[in-house]
Amino acid sequence: MRKLSITMKLTLWYGIFMLLSIVLTWYVFKRTATVAAERYYRDELAQAVSLAIENASYSDGYLEFEEMPDAMEHVHLSYFAEDGALLYGHICSEEVHAPGKYFMDYDEHERHRYIYDEAFELEGYGFILIRASISMQDAESIRDLLSASILFIIPALLLVSLAGGFILSRRAMHPIKRITETAQNIAVGADLEKRISISHPSDELSELSSVINGMLSRLERAFAREKRFTGDVSHELRTPVAAVLSLSEGALMEGANDADKTLALWKIREKSLEMSRMIKNLLLLARMDAGKCDLQREKTDLSEIAEAVFSEAHERFKDKEIAAYVNLEPAECRCDPMLTALLIMNLTENAFRYTKSGGEIKLMTLHAPKGAIFMIENRGAGLSPGEDKIIFDRFYRANKSRSDGGNGLGLSIAKAIADAHGAYLTCESEENAFVRFTLIVP
Image 1 (cartoon, one colour):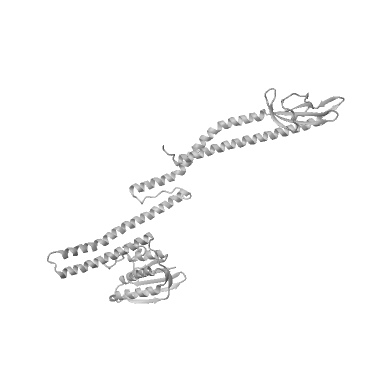
Image 2 (cartoon, rainbow, N blue to C red):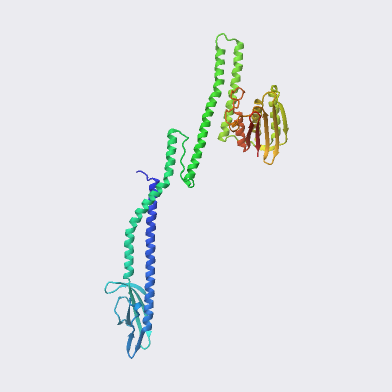
């Protein structure tokens, strides 16, 4: 059995709600009209009986009952002796007389009447019973007309409500249908460039569309980055793998002496270490991305880490004769010392690597209200306009020749470590002037 669509479910619920509302309204109206009619009958009958009592008299052995005013002609009055004998009027009900009682009954002509019994004592005569009655024909005619009208109107209102509910629910579900179609097109064609059109920016479905469009934009960027990342990994590994294969084949060729084989092994080891470092860095980034890199936070002084890392880098790159300007003030924070040292080492090595011989590097740490600050700046070529926005992308290197000895992952790892600490790592540059990296650990 095919399940009902949301549009049909909403239409049915709307129709049922309208039907129940109409029936409830009819019931309340009918009940209110009945109560109002009964209240009117009681008031009329009580007033008529009160006038009848005032207008009754007994003298010289005769009972006299004056006629009712014209306004009360629609009320019929009957007078009875205490033993029930009819004195005046006619019998409109066989019910036993009960003073103070209101009830409904049919008269001899099968007409429905509302009846009120009362009794009073007439001086010189004794007790007299009064039975006042009023026809219910008008009220019943109105009730019958109302019932007939409702029975005629209900189907029409139900059809109108169903049609209106279907149109409204279909219009309400149209954006969801558009979202579904867009998602299906993306799933079939894997085209993440498609977006959901937004017709009414202020409603909830448009907000949902905006959220989905934002998600698609992030997915598109993530897939593009992943695609570029995969291509870069392939490119970076292709060169050392090809070198290892070439060196291996050369060492295995006939005529290769021990010296050639030893040299080949040393070069294979060098390439293998290069690939090992790359794989280690990729695994670290993967753990960072998955949030599986548990931080061992402890009280740490960035100045001590920066001093140790800078001294080692300065010694390693001493052939470049780079001038160093160091100002290390205490900069305490809570962080993972090992990962923070790796972050500072990557920034420092990047500065030395891209500073020309005879250039200069400035290094400083300090403690400010916003956190512990580490800053390193190297003077030189600087970055091209816009490169500071993509400098942290994986495998991106400002040196397009890729002959600087790095693999383009150092700054990506530094940014991932900063993000894991909730720290801020920014890059500022001016072409042909300087590049400055600033780390702020809250």
